Image (cartoon, rainbow, N blue to C red):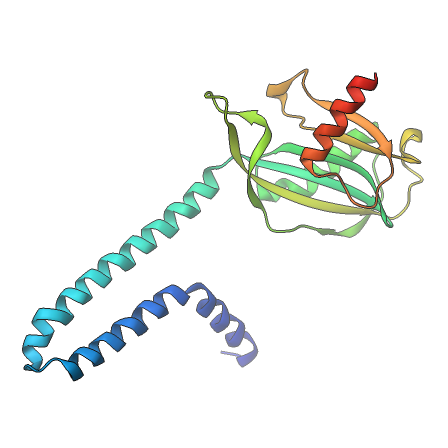
Length: 218
């Protein structure tokens, strides 16, 4: 295998297996210590100490593997939501928070569709790259469980960068447009408002606060 390929793979495997390596190291140290300190025959050491220890270690490793798989399955089962920001140079033009997302493969196309809708169904001129931090597990700011608590969602956040603002509608030429949650189950509670341009987008909590302020003013 090419050494330039094998090294990243080795580092990846090492980073993902630290816990197992620690367990194996501890087990080997204990075996050596027992062999050195216990004044008895090796057969007795194995029967009394090593065999039970190996059995317990096997159970622990199996539980850790099960836990890791359950965590992956749990993350996969969470509703997916998308927050998308559109920037031009150093300023934020538009933001949409916690839009419904069916899957990771839809992020780019759905983000572009959201941008088009926010711009009165006129396509935007993007650069070909986007910024997309790792998804986070967060509590939704809008969707609740039956008991009234906010649901956990897997939130994806992406940043699009505009080449120019020539295709923006008039209201966006000097303002920042914010949409809050376009979930169809919340029909009538979705919000949008305009504010002066910003260099960084609102957090979702800040956006909700600004929306409430805008409703009071109106």
